[in-house]
Length: 482
Image (cartoon, rainbow, N blue to C red):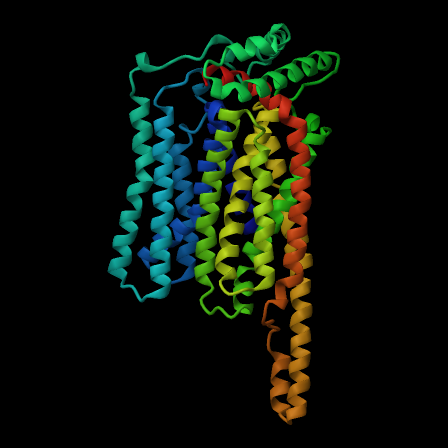
């Protein structure tokens, strides 16, 4: 009981830190929501591997020291940064150097992921001395401090270098009256603008097709905006409260798509040790380390790719989730079949696609339901993780595994009696049930693959429903600057 209380307090404390950092950064950089969410969620996924490496370097004598380090270390960081992590109005300006800054951070992320994977595989496969582990860990701090140095350089940049956004595109997340005025201005802009005039904005003929597509989306948006004026409550892209979002079909499409997609991926992560053992792999730590790295790259890459999709083409961000869930369905099939090398390929596909969910969905929610109550909306979506684990891992995967393990134990017991070895049959009754072969997770993996296909259908419906609002948010600037 005491352990349950400690886990409850610790996990909810982590959720609070996560929410404070994520909400503040998304409000500070609303024009780069995908990269911001991807980087933050990526480092959250990688933090376990980093802390493990630090613990290995310190070489504490017992596990109690590890628990003390995990409890004391984050507390010190929180007290040191509690007055820094806050909304600072960064959305009022766009600097020309922002693109370069994000490129540097992405490069650091890839370097950090590759370096961590290399040293973890080395430590698992080869006996490494403690002095060499210390050197590896000290080198690890170098890429970790590069984003901090970069932020200080950006903070001391000359204000004369800043480029303000055009007035219609400046946005104050805390001012609902400004949101209403901007909605009316953009709506009237779309109503008075003809498709031919939009096409004339694009000088290169190679962009003609994009311009025509965006013109149709603008026209649909304008018509939709006129009809929406007669409705009560906020519209897509405006600020929703949690109660207002809960009665919207878009929110529940996101919720169930996330539950099915990330829930099936988390089932693999929870059972990765047993899955690798059942397929005959002795060193299961390698796959656990690998899926942490792929999860990190999936979160960072998902935010980066989705930002390109919405910024350069004005397509709905959930399109990337559709692709990720299709790939995840294929990854589950690899686990089900148990082909040679399937563990490596399945770990890669599941890790990347699971991470992409948690970079894209929070950014999508902030775009469709606003930033004012983003913390409440984001944490409600977090219920998809425990719900998916309870249903997919606790009910489906574990029961199927136990059933197959009992079948194999029963067959082994019968064979022992036939061969006359009574004592070997008696010993297996006291041992824990273990399943061997691809049959152990075949059915559960195929069920997970089917759930991913259902999630694809839900995400495609969400893409269809939100294509006009993304044209409203990003399409006009996409045409203007191409």
